[in-house]
Every structure is written in structure tokens, then in C-alpha cells.
Image (cartoon, rainbow, N blue to C red; front, top):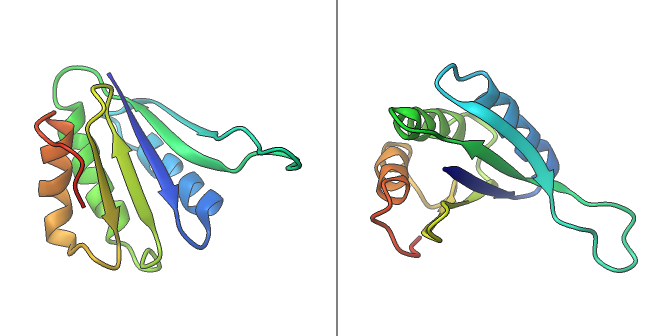
Length: 120
């Protein structure tokens, strides 16, 4: 199962790269890739803003939720927004300005467990 995490904010590409690097350091996760949207007409290239995590069976989703919570809570993340989507289409958006750190893991578990619908 792949989990897709779109990153937006003042420094979208840098934050997406930071998140991908962070998740690659988690021993319980495999297959973390960083990609971007296709360039719009007139643009030279794409912005790497999508992190894809291959989260297999076992505790990978728990590891992902805990790791995202820790990354999201770091200083200088106040302008970051994550939109997390799993294969079934369930999504959740997290805005660093609007979500308390202790709520992040619970929200992530809710969407990653497959019991969530679009929410903020």
C-alpha cells in the first residue's frame, strides 16, 4: 500500500525534500520516493512536492504516523501543510498553524487506518 503525502508551504520543494529524507531514515519504512507534478504549460520543470511511502503490512503505518508527528513538530514547520492520501482515496490535511502536535498522531492514525474521510 502506498501513502501519498503532498507538501505545501512557503518552501514547498525544500520541505518535501526534508520530509522524504526524514522518512528514509526510519528503519520501519521502505520505498520512500520524492516526485512532483508535471509542469504547467510555459513552465520549465516541476516542483518536487509529493512524497510516496510504500507502507506494507505490519507496523509500518504506526511508524509512519509517529515519524510524521515528530517531523511536523520540529521548529520552522509553522508554514507547512501536508495532505495525506492512501490508495482508497481517504485523505486528511494537516496545517502546522492549526493542529497541535499531540493531535497529529491521532489524526494520522485515523486516516492511515482507513477509517477517515476528507477532514481537516
